[in-house]
Image (tube, rainbow, N blue to C red; front, top):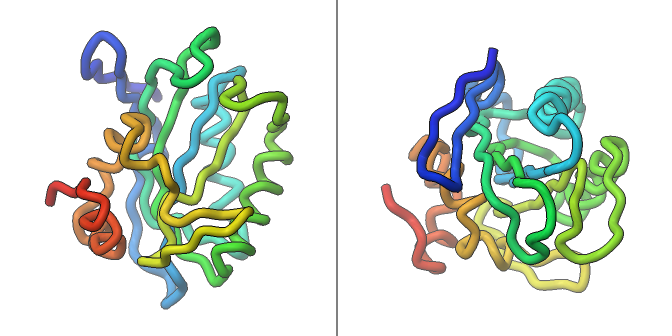
Length: 179
């Protein structure tokens, strides 16, 4: 069952059986926010498959998801609209191991990297990992562009305030929080 809510001419929210989703914490693992996106094929169906893949995963416990946002592309604009959502997860993995894990999931779901901002089947970004700040060749936390993207900010508004508090320090430091 898919329900749509138009925000304006460019942005539409999609509600599916698992976007949004909310459950209780499972353990005392570290918390992270993942941004997911894609614009090739049946992305909404792929997000549902991803949800079930992560529900069965040993290294990730999905606590909450947002509605799916349909939005115009940025960067390379000659492509289909994107679908984006945010997932609040718990994981025992370190940030770098989580990155390796989500890159493997992207490949499993058919991701090919042809050029910057190219169309994609699935993109998974680590937006926040607890209140960790890091800047390495492989990973920058928090994600350097999160505060500039409607594709993150609009879904992020649907994460419950009690879960956003885990990232409050970093969000406030970047000047983007509205509790």
